[in-house]
Length: 110
Image: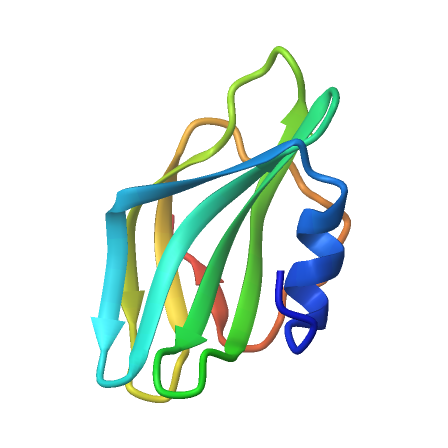
C-alpha cells in the first residue's frame, strides 16, 4: 500500500481482505468511483471511493454501511459520479449506521 494514501492505508492495514465489485463502477473525466468492502475478523465495512486517475489520489471515501458476521454486506447496485467528484449510490440489503458522519458529496439514494 502506498504511503501517500493515509486513509486507505489505515483502513486496509488491519483488513483480512478487500473485495471490489468490478460491475459497480462509474467514471467521469479523470475520476472513477467504485464500491469496495473490507473484511475483518468478524465485521465488514462497505465504502464508495472516488479516485483521480491522473494523480492516483483518493478524493472521497464514503461509508455505505457495515455489520458483523455472519450478516451479509450492503450491496451497492449503482453509482453516479458528477464531474466535481460528488457521488451518489443505490444499495440493496441492510446498511446499518456506522456512527460516522457522511462526508460532503457522499449521498445514498433511496
